[in-house]
Length: 302
Image (cartoon, rainbow, N blue to C red; front, side, top):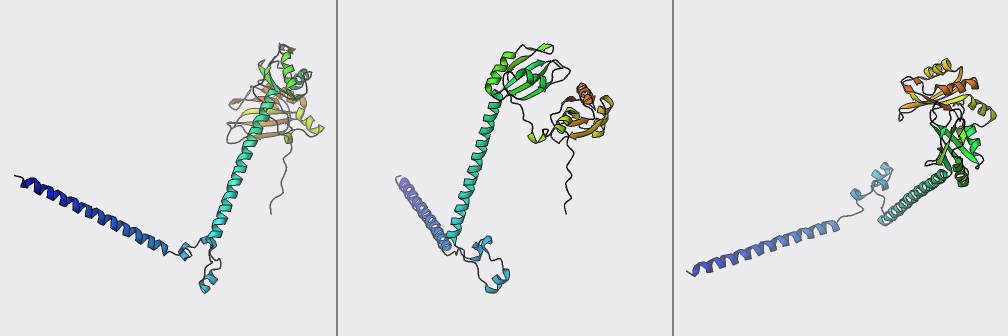
């Protein structure tokens, strides 16, 4: 009865030995394969044609075919050039990123400074002009800019007044409750800065300032309305239009226009057109800060 277990033990031992031999043979074969790969790689020639960079090839193909020679590629030189170019590229990228960060910080700092120098004025009478509003606050300090916004027919018009320094803005807060026209104005610290007008668009002479007095700025114009229709609208309601500039793009859903009249009285009448429907949109009309200049004709390219 003891012979059975002895036989089974011997069979298991024989099986383990055969498994270990197979593992050893597989390891030896893998090691041989690795040695063969190492030997193959050591025989490769980095100066062979198939490893030759295309950027270093001889441009004269005829000479290349006749002489059957190749430019001897110096890997150390190429690696040095690559490393130098990479360092220069990183240095330029870091410089540009730093400059963008600096410009962003400067812009935010300037904007915050403008906000501190600006006050928000509300409940402005519809008869009050920007010149009159600026004159009211000129006693507090030098007024840099003054913008009245809102519907000219509404008593809920508001404005932003920017001073040359923060002291003027703080002093302007004391004028809250001052009656200007028929209503007392409210004055509060502003939360936003006035968007500056491109100085190249501002009037450059007395003639252009006179043109501004005859010009209105019209917004919220229906995109389907043509320039001829805008001109006809204002001429029928206000008077003769001498020049008009209708502007728009593919981003905004409406367009804007600068309309210059022959008479300053017509421009004043045009302010009453704010809220009237032109096309499908109620337009907004305000005095223009910029004149409508004649288009510059560029010479044709030859």
